[in-house]
Amino acid sequence: MNHTKVLIIGAGPVGLTLACELARRNVPFRIIERAATASQGSRAKALQPRSLEILNDLGIVEQLMEIGITELPYRKFIGNQLMGETPRTGFPRTDTRYPKTLLLPQPAVESALRTRLEELGGKVEWATELIDFTQTDEGIICRLEHPNWSEELNAIYMVACDGGKSTTRKKLGIQFLGETHQEEQLWVGDVEVDGLKPDAWYNWLSPVYGIAMALFPFKNSNKWQLQAVVPPDENGNVPTPTLEGFNELFKERTQMEGVTFTNSTWQSIYRVNVRRAATYRVGNAFIAGDAAHVHSIAGGMGMNTGIQDAYNLSWKLAAVINGEANDQLLNTYDEERIPIADWLLETTSQRQKVMMAGATSGKSGFESLGTADTTQLNLNYRGSSLNVGNIVTLTGLQAGDRAPDVQLSDGRWLSEQLRGTEWKLLVFNTKAQSNERIKILSVEETVQLAYGVGSGAVLIRPDGYIALIGQANEINNYLKNL
Ligand SMILES: Cc1cc2nc3c(=O)[nH]c(=O)nc-3n(C[C@H](O)[C@H](O)[C@H](O)COP(=O)(O)OP(=O)(O)OC[C@H]3O[C@@H](n4cnc5c(N)ncnc54)[C@H](O)[C@@H]3O)c2cc1C
Image: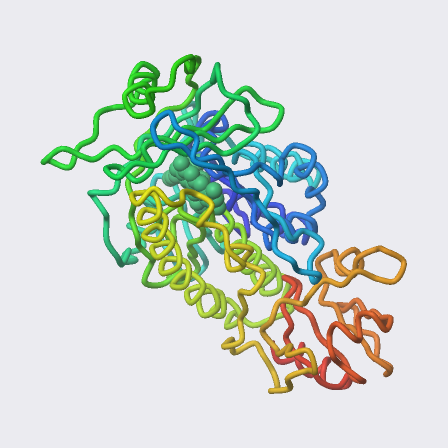
């Protein structure tokens, strides 16, 4: 039987993020993907600021900024009448290098992650499916199948990043709590568009459908994503989307002349499910991403939240496997991430309602979706058992908060020094004892002002959240007790 430390199931954005993170920490793992090749459907169109910070740590944000765009305005119509245009604004924050949502198709994000994974020495095993598994005292015995072979693999840990229909979650007996909104269904797909300028997100509002049609262009590509609300029949069914159907629906709902769709490379039906897994861990098996939570796409946060799940779990798995922490550390994964999923389900459902109300009344479309919250920069783990102390700094920072980024006096950003897999210790007017697991940074006054700390130290976890605000001599004890 073959052996590995971690088996990752699914090479979507979540599995790939986890794989890169384990590869950076030299943890032996395998990542398998049932599909023979990468999916080309555009699906997620937005990377939120918090995910951009993570991808900066992974070293791929600059190339993604080249491919994506941040400035596309929202252009809305009722039928063939232009009703107005709203500029897309970022959020006026100085505590991040990336205050704006980056628009680009999901396959571009996956491709950049795959390339980074290969640079780090890993690779996706395509056309390889997890068929069955059994948990034992020594780990998990997994049966993998490829068209030309099958394999028994013993993995110490397994992480299911196998999407909303996760068979692993079902086999683990984890309940997927929530509801399916059978009445809310969309046609989605990718098309080439003749007759429209690719310089805005287009949406057609309607008192009947809310969003009668929406078209989203991508930079340097002739591909656009199409979305249209299609009410189901009395049995809950929606007709199968086709290129011809897309063209007919557009003509019927917009009455616009001179616009034609060609070359559709992806067509699908999207049904709103609002569900969250009851637990993210059973024994040595974990779930992450859509396998753990699904919700309305309003606000563009599904892929982003999954990437952040992986970023939370990966350093903890590596610390336990490398003997730097007890297994209990892994219980803080769902302790920290389930409250985020609950917020996510609530906020996306709320956004969906607001957007549909604005669209059916003809007032607003997609521009109502992006708010300060969708940046995901304000999410925190203040309730986590990993936090120590109850100090609140002069700028309101507490243990559990995301460590804010700061632009330094020479124009560079603190995040450049925070990159890497170690813990970081910011020391303010004090000295700290060296420790091989910690990168110690004596910081300048700009950082001191932003953090609101006169003297002392701030310990930052490998995933960029503050663990402790206090004195430098508390740090070694903290790490010993993990
Ligand atoms: C139209 C649309 C628009 C969206 N817009 C946004 C947006 O703007 N922003 C956003 O953040 N999110 C958006 N999303 C959601 C986003 O696409 C998902 O949240 C994201 O794909 C989840 O990633 P994942 O890695 O968890 O799962 P997936 O991307 O579903 O990947 C799971 C992978 O696991 C593989 N797999 C399954 N079972 C097995 C098995 N047994 N063995 C091996 N492999 C297996 C599958 O083949 C698949 O490749 C959108 C989705 C849609 C459909």
